[in-house]
Amino acid sequence: MRIAVNTRLLIKGKLEGIGWFTFETLKRITSQHPEHDFFFLFDRKFSNEFIFSKNVTPLIVPPQARHPVLYYLWFEHAIPGVLKKINADLFYSPDGYLSLKTKVPSMNVFHDLNFEHYPGDIPWLERKNYRYFFPKYAHKARRIATVSEFSKNDIAQIYGVDKNKIDVVYNGANEDFMPIDKTEKVKTRNTFAQGAPYFLFVGSLHPRKNLARLFTSFDIFKKTDLKNVKLIIVGEKKWWTENIKTAFDDMQFQDHVIFTGRLDADTLHKVTASALAITYVSYFEGFGIPIVEAFYCDTPVITSNVTSMPEVAGDAAILTDPFDVESIAGAMTQMASDGKLRNQLIEMGRERRKMFSWQKTSERLWASIEKAMEINY
Image (cartoon, rainbow, N blue to C red; front, side, top):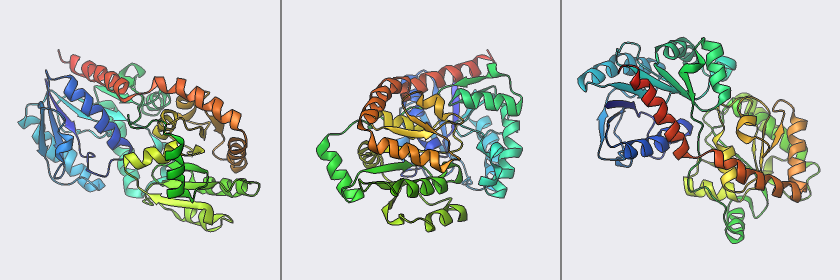
């Protein structure tokens, strides 16, 4: 089979959530299925590290699709011609986008529908693009993969798609995420947190990540904190809104918040494994990869009791109300003061993490791709 793949988010040094999903799954699928030919469609010059095996043919397809107008030109004008030229049997798109103008069977991955629930969190033109095209993509796709039962039900309900057409593949965690020894933890804390214990947030600084309430909650926690606990924020200020800025500016304990920007995978692993706990209290997630990364690092987890997060965390985390700063602050106090609880959560996380690996994701995703291809044969 000749499978064309949208790989526009495989950008060297700039992999984020969907980019990592694309990288980790395609790395395995292409090498484990040499009987098929894969055509990787890039929208710019690519790195050879993304050409995972001999059965991968990379193609550069202009223009660079980084704006809603350019999305349209790439998917609706450039992609159909390429699919026809290479005689593709299937077009697979891991970032949800499809081409409505091609007759080639298509399959995509919807990671979540946050833009349907919280449209105000997204710039106007991006929002209009998502809400116009994604319902059409949902019905265009031969099959849809998604990363949680929550998202599967959400897609079915909002877009009126038969649940039997949607496969849950879950996410995994980078294999480098693992516990580290005490010496390395001390070194990491000295490097990033002045030697102090710290709570950790990892992710894009987007409104749905709930940073404004996290800052307020941390301020409440600090009023009774006797351990000099810090808060480390890992991620780029790409979506630094006025609301987030105001919450941070109003903090009494602002000096205890440390921004690192983006970290490479090895450094992020050490920072995660050295944390007192992660504080991942988004108000909307399709999955929540940092939860699983923390499990693999033997790091306790505080997360939210809404959307997909209880499904991912199970009983291996403290669940909080993301809209209630007292709830989040109380979880921080409980985590910081109760070593026995932290150890219990670590043990439960070790069991919980067995559910999630990129190999399992890849196997589930490939099974979904095979279903999409079988429709025509």
